[in-house]
Amino acid sequence: MISLKEAKSIVQKRISILGVRKMDIEYLEGMTLRENIIATFPSPRFDNSAMDGFAVRAIDIKNATCENPIKLKIQGISSAGIPSDMVIGPGECIQCMTGSEIPRGADSIVKVEDTSGFSDNNFVKFMTPVTKGSHIRKKGEEINKGELLIKKGTRVTANELGTIATFGYGELCVSRKPRVSVFATGNELIEPGNSLGKGQIYNSNLYLFKDLIKKAGAKIEMSEVVKDDKNSLKLFLSKALKNSDLVISSGGISMGRYDHVRDVLIELGVEEHFWKVAQKPGKPLFFGTKEKKIIFGLPGNPVSSFIGFMEWIWPVLRDIMGGKSKKTVYGILDEPFPREKKMHRFLFGEVRYRNNRLVCSSTRKIGSHMLTSALGANCILESSPGTTPLYPGDLIKVNLLPWKTIK
Ligand code: AMP
Ligand code: MG
Image 1 (cartoon, rainbow, N blue to C red):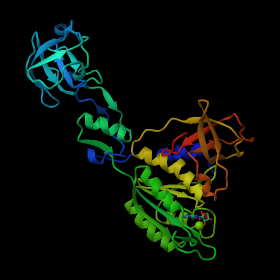
Image 2: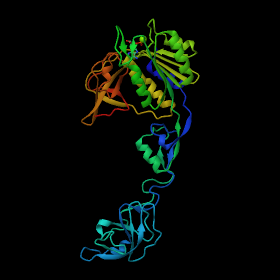
Image 3: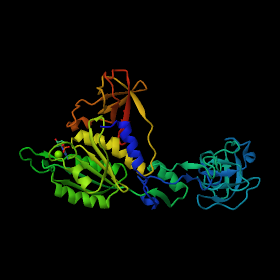
Image 4: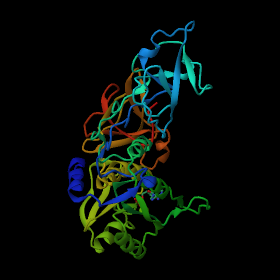
């Protein structure tokens, strides 16, 4: 058995970053950027109107009041996409819509509500003066040309997509999606929707794994329930090892008489780097490689499988796509948390804000077979080894489940 730290460093040394591909903006959502996104022009790109109104010279209407409105001659219209090439002089103005270029000669925009309106195409009356520069969005006031907008390693969401489109990028360099094959093993496993026989249980792990793989931004290549016999395992694994960047097993990796996954992997030429890690749940954890392919064997107990995926496979998928690692978050325990003398301890937890502090506790059921402990959880809590439990008020590491929120 090796320490968690040692195991993590072995994994880091054995994994390598995947290749890149160009991706059309239509399909960028969820992809990891492999290039920095730079402003190709200043934003706004030109001085433009923030209001529907009139472009004027402020000096021309400085004495305007409701009682003594000032009348200016309308020289034309500047609308979004169709700028006016007129230059306005003393006593003149131009109708100017939101987003349209400010005509030469004008220094301010008066919003239409402060005028006699758009109904007359020749003249308009102004009832109030305007401060010079009003309602003009200045060229470059948001972003200068050449500024870094989005760092490589960022995963694209709606937040990034808008800016990517704003600066005209039609395609970008992203990581190719890791191809992941996943299988559950066990003669006892039955698919949900069917009736159970004596000693049988429903296969839950494959369903949660398939969702986690997609959430992590990877592609499911193969996913199957495989019987606990060497031939079936060999059949699945030899194909999976050919077609995938990463192979994950749930179950069949421990010390049981029917746990054949490790033997079959080794027979198929997988190099084992470790098989047991000082962590609970999930001590039997196989990590191997075959050329650049990565293989993880997680124990079948559903909580061990789920937590094992989040602690080991999620970060590996992120790293091989060139993603950025997350900052470690700590919360304050509001109830005791168990520790193991020599092992890291993980439990599903709930973290919440109380009086501007992050407070957390584990969810109720702590057995590694008790998958309902994931219901209501928004994080995995992690304690390092120690001889005493952690107590209320102690800090604990909080690994947020990325798709959950803190309330
Ligand atoms: P194993 O790691 O194969 O020894 O399995 C450990 C425990 O997890 C056993 O109780 C299995 O029945 C259970 N188990 C294994 N695979 C699954 C699965 N796909 N879904 C639910 N439970 C499973
Ligand atoms: Mg089994």
